[in-house]
Amino acid sequence: MQTNIASKLPRLSVLDLAPIPEGSNAATSFQHTLDLAQHAEQWGYHRYWLAEHHGMPGIASAATSILIGHVAAGTSTIRVGAGGIMLPNHSPLVIAEQFGTLASLFPDRIDLGVGRAPGSDQITSRALRRNIELNADTFPQDVIELLDYFSPDPKGPVKAVPGTGLNVPVWILGSSLFGAQLAASLGLPYAFASHFAPTYMMQALEIYRTTFRPSQYLEKPYVMLGFNVFAADTDEEAHLLASSMQQSFINLRSGNPTQLPPPINNFWDQLGGAERALLNQVLSCTAIGTAQKVLSEMQAFAVKTEADELMLTSQIYDHQSRLKSYKITATAALSTGY
Image 1 (tube, rainbow, N blue to C red):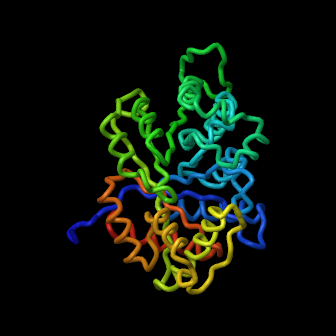
Image 2 (cartoon, rainbow, N blue to C red; image 1 turned 90 degrees about the horizontal axis):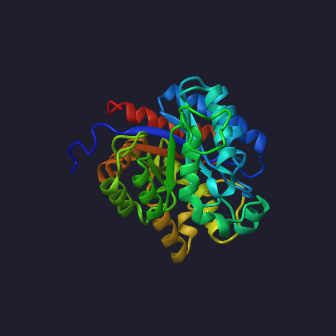
């Protein structure tokens, strides 16, 4: 199917994990996040999301709503949001108030993606003062409560101020079938974490699309998929850039999360069979190479999944190289009429 493996791509957006490279710090990470967001806005990306993680030495976006405010204040048109807020860590009322505040400051630009995972280990979850064992199973009820806080006429006795009646689109995030079922039943947009957990992607998409119920929020299914991109002038350079994220992922899965390591030449050749198998499995939704190669692989992925939007993430050690990767990708996408 060389034909129009995609003449035109779906919307492209940015997922920023606010990486802290080895030897750097959170303050520098936040400067880089804003710089990337400003460039992403210029290059035509649709939205810019930040993710909640706790206790991770290489990720600076723990106070997600504060960082969203930082990015929204430094940009003017790009949508900014959470991809996502890990709802078991929080009271739905507090999240409604936080995102009601953001939506009041930046009208019609704020998104709220919510997930069921804690975004941390169990020890860190307990330090957040939320009992994950008790609260994980209340996720659907928490989402319904959250939606009610944004309603013009809330059913509950407590009002979110600010929050009530504000336009804050709520998304369901997931990496399994659970989120697909919930998003479909509530008629909400759905974002799947295929950039690091692609195993159930196609099955989740099928469930979401076939069981979707139109709602006051959304008339028909809307799917956004995570996708890793490492674009550079040569394939060799792109693979070098990708080695930082690959190292980081292996460290995380080994129980030793680290700051984002510097790239290593020929890293793939240094890996054992088990490590290669792990990376091939969890990072299958990834494009590494020149503009043409990245474009071709994004197009093939869009055709396969029929995604409405791709959220691109580039965990690259050097900030200028990360900027260049997103610019190369945006320029290639524009060549298709995107």
